[in-house]
Image (cartoon, rainbow, N blue to C red; front, top):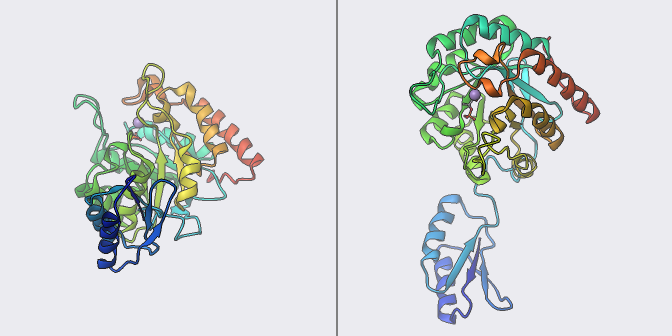
Length: 346
Ligand code: PEP
Ligand code: MN
């Protein structure tokens, strides 16, 4: 922590800051500057004490700003966990050295639609199968998902194919139910800061696929992951899926691909890109999926539907089976070029 004093702060104001620090058991380090003075806190503080000190110091006269030199998240930080995490579900894994593809429709619509999706996903070499049973829809009049019936279909198709299934859970109370039927719990962008949900997902010890909120900062995203990790659940996959766009006339969101190298620098958790929600337009999905691989992502989540025109949700961003298979071929070639594996169950 560094406390920067205002220009022209008096000696009494500087002394008051030092006094507060000493009374909390930390020895201040006064750093005279060219036009203003800073006071450093050389010791690592636990997050609770740091927050309290920040509030007390921020209210003192003569203090201009307080900056943090270490990350606010500890369990998610690569500072304290040098080995990168691999998250496993069934025979699939998401982590360093390989590029994972999670494919499938936005929503589970019927056994036939979902098992046909699974067949394409598996045949083209992807290892995880997505499909929403409980859908977070902007309008209450839109299709809300097949709910419990959707969960039963997810389980059946997951068992039949061996693919690990990924599906969204929207509330803490529903975690035990969804966890009984699916292999990976998705926490959607709209729920990224539903703290009781994060805690319940952590308690379940199931792998968690955490999507970044549309206006969440990187720190907020990693602190959300921290809630899950704090329950003793190390199995968190981070997913960037586009942030609030400046202009919705061309894309649904703005895919923040720079989040990949940024997250990789600060966290050991695997990072996946979702170009489907990131762009909202099927023809923009393949270029952004390939860019994600080159940017260093550990995988992509791609919406694919056997018949996108008749999809009950997100049809305009879904690839059809032929487009999905073509993209898989291109990703495989690129992964090979980059020395990465692309595991397959097929
Ligand atoms: C989804 O994956 O279908 C979904 C609703 O995603 P997001 O939470 O990123 O909008
Ligand atoms: Mn969707």
